[in-house]
Image 1 (tube, rainbow, N blue to C red):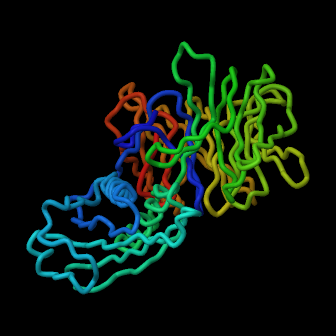
Image 2 (cartoon, helix red, strand yellow; image 1 turned 180 degrees about the vertical axis):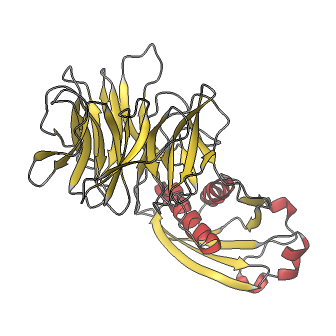
Length: 394
């Protein structure tokens, strides 16, 4: 299950996606706190439908915005007024209770038979006494949570200036308990709702990763009695395995342009990094070393790969330039640095760092080389960076 200061976990499929392996409890770690969270008031939406639809929108949007400590949602019973339209907004009332932003909206039901609805909403800056945004979104009454997440994304973007991640979905592997023989590859909303099983097996499922268009996933399955890399279409469920090689076939990672999958093969003896050309259906070897090279992941520009190797004697992060094939060591502090990820802007690395025998999620500034420990727990693993770069899931 997930801990999101809530419960499951999700991979993203909107314009970006992210994934993680989840065999125990997941957490979303707030890596940069907000000294003074912004106060936002959300007026329960006026409706032509029943009260329940309005409450769903209010509760989901409120929970979204409060999830990461950047906002405090003012409850309706603390409000001095409950305006139903922009004309009824008195900015003085909201300044008296230190509100920074106000959201006002309504639900229209153009077709009861088809369950179609339109949600209109506006965002107001109380300090500057101006409208920041007006929007309208259409959907179905049975997809209210999706509509609410989209509204939360737009509110967040207009206030913070960066994309929200509330419409993100998480791809994860679930094993209900150690007593269960079933592994399940699932997707869910970022708040843990609407989870769907994509594939189940009595054998382990590992390393799920999304295609850049969000229409396919790659993962490792042991259903054939050995590790094999599969590609599965999200909507049809159709799946196929990449050309299986002798030994290890693991750690698939999709290139940003969708043309290649980086993976680990041991067909030559030691595990090395390979690229699979999806168009030509052939493997291309990238590294060739007597040590272990594993856990490849792409820079967002598609020009470099980050991977873990023990070629120096201990697990460290290395980077390969795909044009020159030049390999550079990236981590030097500590005897264990692994499972690396680039931040979306390629300015930082996120990875697992061992300090005093404990495993923590850490970040490293690629310009200065400085490492920062992000977590206080001690058995952290599988970090993944959110598409907007603000959060780490592990």
